Image (cartoon, rainbow, N blue to C red):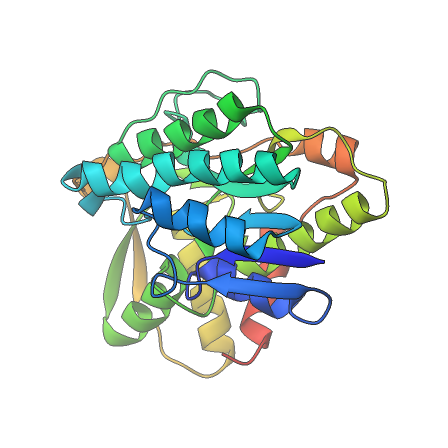
Length: 289
C-alpha cells in the first residue's frame, strides 16, 4: 500500500514515520518537496504518486503568529486540505486529516463532542475549521481527527519548553484555569495505525469527524507538575510552580478555557481509545529522544 504523508519534521508526522515506516510504501513530502501553499503543486504530486491513502499531518501551527499571518495560515490549514480531499476523491483513496480542539471556544462546561457547535476564538482555530469544512464539502472518504495539546520529544511544544524552564528558573508561573488532555504524538500515530488496520481488514467504522485525545484531564499547571515530577525523579532541581489565571498571561491569540474532547464516538465506532495522559507521558519520556 502506498501512503502519501505530508509534513516531515512535525510532531505527528515524525511519529507516523516511525509507526508506519515498516508496513507500507511511505512517501513523505516535507516543505522542501511540497509547498502546501501551491495548489498546483499539490495536485501534481498526488497525481504523480497515485497513493492508496493520503495522511495530511502538515499544518500551520504558530497560533499567535497566525493572528498576523492569516493568509498563510488559511492557505496551509484550509485551502490545502480541500485540494488534498479533491485529489483523494478522484483516486478513490481515503484522506486522514488532523484538526484541533481550537475549533471550539471553550465555553462549554463539559467535554466537547463531535456535534457541538464550533466557534473558534483565534485565526488558527478558524483556519483549521475552514480546512475541516473544505474536506467535508468534497464528500470523499475521509477521517478528520480532532486532537488537543499535542506534545513529543521533538519540535516546539509545552513538554520541551517546561523541561527547559523548570531547570533554568527558581519560580515558574503556569496557567491553571485552562483544562484539557495533553496528547502524545506517539499515541496519535499508534491510533492512526490502528485505524488504517481496521480499514484494510474491512473492519472500518463510519468515516467522518472524530475526537482523538488522551483520556483524563488536567490544566497546564497540572501538566507542568507531572513534567517536574519526572525531572525530580531523575535527580534534577526544578522551579517552584505558581498557579495563575490565563488572564495573567495574555497572548495575541485567545485560548479556550475548556479544551476537553469527548472521544466516546471513536471508541464506539472504531474500537480505539487512547491511554490516560499520565501513562502516555511516562511512555513518551521513557523513549530515547
